Image 1 (cartoon, rainbow, N blue to C red):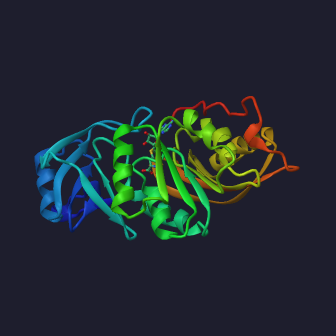
Image 2: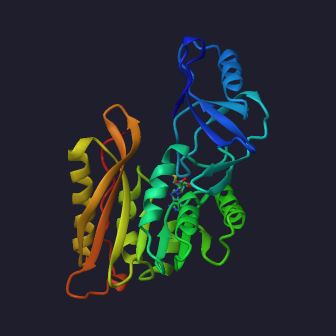
Image 3: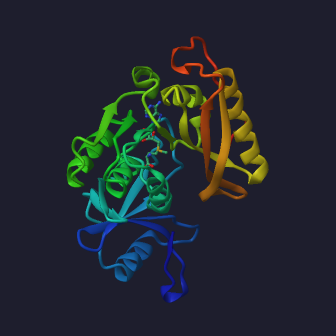
Length: 293
Ligand SMILES: C[S@@+](CC[C@H](N)C(=O)[O-])C[C@H]1O[C@@H](n2cnc3c(N)ncnc32)[C@H](O)[C@@H]1O
């Protein structure tokens, strides 16, 4: 989060875009702020910011969008964000994107080995898939699944923008409908949907190769106890499917709310007694978390 200090004021904001092609600032207004003054100050401090948007509500719904209102600048809020040597085109008013997660994308992408087949569920405009394709150019294949039409359109553009045709692909649709066609195919599965990944753990595990693989699971957790609860939830689904999961490690990806963090938990998944889980019938899923975050 960028925090400016000019005139003694701190402005919580995210800047999405680049110095070369321009950027959009997404600010959080606080009580007493004059929106026009805040916008003018952001544009004065960050000359490459073309538009200033203010958060006007929480992220909502399946597509995890929030209302944003234009405080100043260009009403065309499409930008090309640069991070770690790749470019991501998007419009923050139409799709989910967080520049704060760039470091997490780099860390995950750096773990991918040559020849690996990778599935990114809840793929958005493709930042994880693009990061993997660019940081590990010898990856076998990367498939993203995404339901938001605008995000899928940007994902397709981002594949071209980063020269990843033939290695990275996006499938439009709900993971519940798309993933059964992909069972048993991947060495690594990412689940970057922290508020809902738990509902889809059985699908993700079934998408892994019968030999097993790596699961990157995201959740909102309150401390280590919260991480333990998520590990328990994933382990129960795995056990039901005849799989063993071992925690390889976990990392805090970012702050979510007072006392709650966005966390990535990495699991090594392996079959118990050589069972093929992709063909197991019936549901092994966990119910969603009961409490509201
Ligand atoms: C938290 S965002 C993450 C997007 C992307 N991975 C990123 O990091 O920028 C979750 C994404 O999952 C998509 N999504 C939510 N539920 C889905 C489902 N059942 N099937 C496919 N996509 C889904 C949303 O539209 C949204 O783009």
